[in-house]
Each structure stands twice: as C-alpha cells, then as structure tokens.
Image (tube, rainbow, N blue to C red):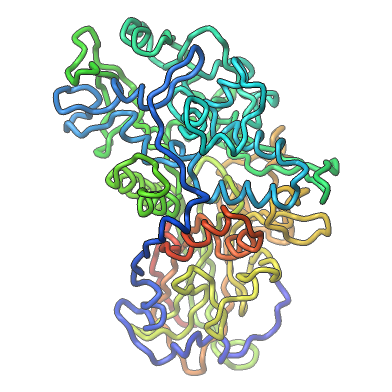
Length: 597
C-alpha cells in the first residue's frame, strides 16, 4: 500500500512506549495484553439457546453414531491396540472427539452464524439450514437422504430427543466420513457437501483385507478397503463450498462466492497429488491433518481396533500407515470455549481431550504453518526530512498446502513489529489489546477493528499507520466489505498467503486467485514480502526488531458484525465470546538485528 504520506514520530510511539521498559524488550502496556486473562464462567441460563443433549449410541441401516464406534476404536488399558511405539494412546475416537470435526454441530460460532443468516433472510431459512447441515451434521444428511423423515435437515433437529437428534449432534463423525463412497469425488458435483452414500452397508477404510466380522456384528456395516479414504478429494466434498448471494427477500441474485476452497487451493499448488508426476512437497490433506508418524516422528504401526470388552482382538495384525485422527488446523478458540462450558454445551468430551486438541493445534501453528525471515537487512537510514527511518524487508513464507489462513473468512494473520534499543521499545506496529483488537498509534482499536469501519487494504510497504494483515474480506452488493456470508458476491480483499507453487494457469486458479494485491510485485505463490520504511524518533539507535506473526480464528471485527444481528444464538455466543481468552495465537516469532547506514 503506497502513497500514505508522512506519519509523525508521535504517532509511532504507541502508548508512550518510548522510554518505558519491560521484560524481554516489551513495553508494560503490551505485556499486560500478553498475560493470559482468566476465562469467566457463563451461567447456563444465558446459554440455553446453544444447549443440546449428548449423543447416544445409535445404529440404523445407513448411519451410526460415534459412541457405537468407540466400543472398539477407543483406547483401553487392557489392550495394546491403537498405541504408538512408546505406548502412547492414539485411538481414532479418543483423538477425534476433542476436534472441531467432532463438535461441528455444537460449534457455537457456527450455530450463531446460521441463526444470523436466517434472521437476515427468513424466507430462505429451509435452504440455509439444509445447506449448512449437510457438512456439519452429515449423519443426519445421510439418514434423511436415504431413509428420510419427509423433511430436510434443519436446526430444529439439534435439540431433538431420539434418533434424528443424536444423528444431528454427532457432527462430522466416524460414519459421516467413512460411509462416503468414491463416486464423483474431486468433481464439482461432489462439492458443497454433495458426497455420495449408498444404501449398501459398506463402510470404507484404507487397509486391505479387513477383519469383517466384528464390525458387521456390532454396527451392521461391512468394512471395505478403498484408497479414496487417503485422498484429498474426500475432504474436498465439504471443504469446497460455494454460496449464492441472496437479496433481502432471500432470492438468488445470480452471483456466487467461495465461502471456502482449501481443496481447490491445494489442487493448484505444489502439494497436489492429483498430477501425473507429484513433486517432493506433494501430500494429501490427511498427511498434515491425520499424520501417520508419531510425535517422535516415527512411523506408526498398530492394531486399529480392540474388543468391546477391553482386550485385544487376536486375529488383528498391526496396520501401517496408521493416521492419527488429530484433525486440527489453527483453531485454538472454539475447542477452549467448548471445554470451558462443557456442562451446558454438553459435548460429552473430557477436558483432557480438548486440551490435547488445543496442544496439537498450537504445535501445528508453531511448527508447520509459516516462517518469518528478513530478506533485506534491517537498517537505520536518514530520510529526506533528516529524521531516521527503519528500512528493510521481512518475508512471510506459507508452509501449508493451501492459503493461509484458509477456510471460513473470520480468520486472519497479521505482523506485529517492535523496534527496540536493548529493552526499550522505540516503535510498535500491530500491537493488540487483551480482546485481540489491533491498536492504532493512540492505543485504541483501529477503525478497521470496529463494526461499520473501513476495510484493511493490503499492505506492501509499511510507512506509517498501516498494519500488514492477511485475510479474506467479502464484498457485498454495494461493493463494500460485508461480514454476512449470503451478502457476498465475491471478495473485497483476499490477500491470504498463497501455497507454494500456486499456478495462475491451473483450472482452479480463477476460483482461488488473490484480490487486492495487483500493485504488490512481491506477493507470490508461497510468500509475501513486507517492506519497511518506518519513521523513528530523532536520535534513535535501535538494536533489534521483534517480529511476531499472529493468527486469530475469529477477528474481533467479525464478532462485532455477527453479534449486531440479535438472535438467541448470537446473544449466547456473545456471552461466550466475552468470557473467552480471545487473544491471537503466535505462528512464528523472530528477532532481527538492526544495522546502521
């Protein structure tokens, strides 16, 4: 972003941090934001709109809930099955149950968002809910599609007692994925949750020669080997979602928008395995999100099930590769909310399982997501006005196999910079408060952080008050930013970091192309470069710069825009949001030396 003009030295001295000292080169105000706030308990009465019963074990001719699967695919002290070489428990059910896949139908953000979209367009309620529940409640989709109750899945099912309620609340569960047939996967007809399930009793897994009898006796399904269970196209059926822009009456305008497209982003990158000669970086979604190596980076070989009584099945041999069903990305907000409000939201998941998911997500963010490096030395030079300026360039590299961040557009990355002399902060850009809002030079949230404020343009060169924020911002009917999904007819801005090797000539490029970066020659597949040209106080002699890449699952601006639509669900989510620790997660942090002219 160029042509911003001069910015006064006073403006860069955030919260008067020149001359204030704190541990590790941070100012005291920023330190306060970095101290973890205690999460608060929300009374159950305030969350009644999001309360729902636990899931019971259920089995029909076409669907089965996860508690039934747990009888053989969870860890038991009497069995050696589903353990790594160090005997750590890695059963699919136990790892999955704390994930957002498992809790997709209880996700309070999702439920609030659906209610808001319906409130804005009540005439489209049935279509909105049915579309959303295809992927958030796939078992109910399978049951009603093949056996039916005469009506499409809807939010009403989430609080129901009985079979349909249990199927609805079980989220993206075991049978919800393993019952999907290979038909049409990877083609547009499978997208938007239009996966195919046959009424043939087959349940798919990746391993040859399955031991059929226990599964058939317990669930009625016949385990069947199929390679599609290890392919990204399976994930792409739900993780490619295109929505229609609707007018105020709920009628389509003819414009469409990719709410999320990680599968298409992956397919157009160096990570794709759907090419004649996959490169060295190629791996499917499962390679990152269901790793076949343990935490010591050793390949896993183990039995995949045990007896319902708790002992091992003697006829079952070790299987390899064996995928750990972690199913995490960068979401550290919502698993914590579900953990802290288990009594009301009723996920029937122990706190330890959520803790394990949160730890896995933090490890994913810190080690497999992005890296910062200085590709031009940071140095102090004299500007035209005779005042010193910090110049140089910092590169952000995307290590993921899709855009970063990807998926739902509430997410963002940004770069925080602290310029220090010893432990004294001379300049700070991109600081945040305890509510995760990016602050301006006056120590208050920037206008872009508040409901109704302007959008944050892409930043190529930091010369003053702007902050480098990588995100997708939807475009409404008036051409301005919108934060309501069914208002969207495209992107106002999409400068999320492209995956390595993203190819503008690929058939999926049109659906995944960046928006708003045409004037930035350094925005390239796999990375973006931020050029620094920041004014410093006269006489300043900085020694180093602390650079931190932050990630948020839900930006405060997104939350404000959502909560402005008042429904019982958004009101309840607002209580959870206010009680939660909503500070950003750290993706990478580096310290760069500063030289002179």
